[in-house]
Image 1 (cartoon, rainbow, N blue to C red):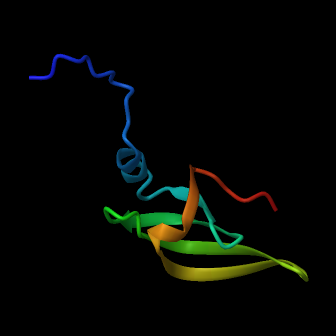
Image 2: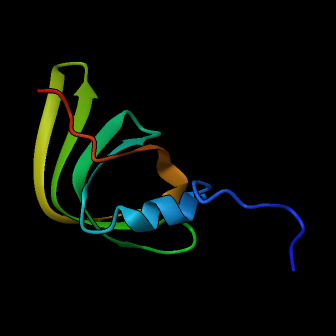
Length: 89
């Protein structure tokens, strides 16, 4: 039995990601891409499967927007997750 009190508000990172399943999530990638989609699932490496995806990429010509039905993201390339986040237009 643990002697340290555990706050009911303490949430581990993977628990937070788990709470996002079925919700919209904004993901910033290492390669200047940003992705907004509905999180379907993830694994221990935070590889993520999203659906109803919009991918935003900054290019020398301007911002490119790509719509995708589904995408599988490699967790190594994810910089930041914003639960419930959406890209500003």
